Image (cartoon, rainbow, N blue to C red; front, side, top):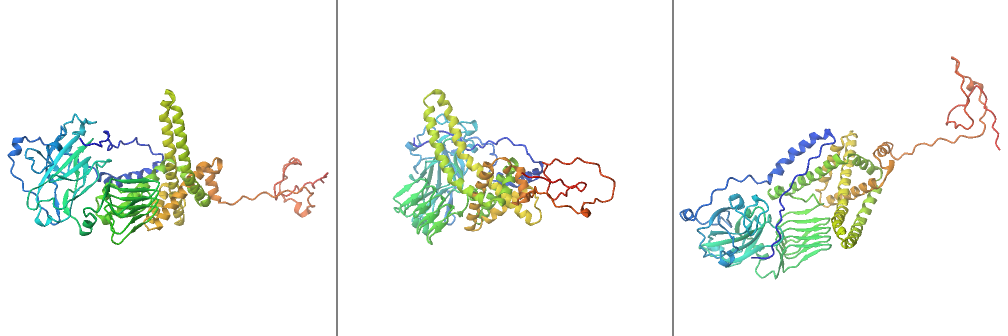
Length: 593
């Protein structure tokens, strides 16, 4: 048995949470429209319900089947999808018995279609060695596929590669009895495979056998996605894959807190991820290259099969470097690509990224507007009043948050060490761990709410420009999302735009959340938003000196019915500014000591 087998886990189920009742009935038309718009994309990647599995054929029926014509290549590509020979390795003895060898008689093996999981084709009997968590998981463990094919004579000296869309979970691939590649680490159940064929291994004009050993730990298993092909590679790629060029072959490379360098003699079978630094590639990378907080450098002669993504940096590509996928400079969330985008033709990837990011931020804004509407209104009105203060809070927050995380981590380790002394303390350790998780997640939640406030503030400003300052909060926020996403498409400028939104959003959330009382209340912000920063006039001081004598003309009241006598106000009463003195009696002289 091959090693490096993780414990059985299930990672594909996504239980839906309870639905929250709407707080604002006016939003329901938009909610329904959004669901109708998103539904086709959400259903695009779902597999159709499998047809009833046919009954397994007996060995006698298989032997009576007519001979099948071996597939031949069309142009530079040989399509290997279709019927393959299949057999479950219940005793895990296939490798020792030589099931990978071309001379093995596989005529009694069952026929299965590739690409498609074996559970969808009736292989559902549980394996006692690898029991299933659920009845629908079917067969888990080892199984073998075999495919016979022929190639023309000019393929003997050509550089070739074997490709699989996805194999669930681990695989070992053999061509004419020799292993050409394997994937046995991580969780690669939905990742493509690509292996180079050594020169001289194929037999032109004769029967060639491709054998694939698969190990499935849970759920669906087998060769589950296409394309499944054998094909020639371009001349420049052949140079990148020349035998002996790479003396250091590694799996996926991930580094947190620094950059990653892939030298000329290194080949990475997987992705290269640098968090907090740049990714400098001079060798060969079969997956994506991602730099968060840095740039991606594709040096001369380098080869990157997947995408090059730089978050907060740029992408520099030499003239003779190769990047097979897209080049993306984005903020987290905008570069996210669901499966339906990957299935689009390459020219439509960038519009797909835009609409995917637009849907993500629209959903976040919708959720924030439904849950924290008053708080968003406060943020939207605070931003134009105090932009400098919001930016200062944002920069301060980004500077302080890592220190808070480190302090909380140290405190948590100390508390856990103290609690571990007693049994009661051990029971409290999960609560301490959950508190640490909350401390880590809280800044991200605060940031998202603050960014929704920035979207609303921008939308309100645009609505005021077109004469609709009292526009609905939800629609104004969605307009702000659209404007920011469109601006994010502009090279370099887009990065600055999103960085500004992030800083102001974090600052707004901290500024309006830390403040208390009428200053940052919803009513208080509404009043100050209407009158701006103007200060109300103070009443003028009343002089204590005796007023000058009033002329009879000014003191004579107008003709009319006699007024009711009123008591004279006490001497201590404050007289408002501009009120004339009583004309019926001259003011008494006031003495001052």
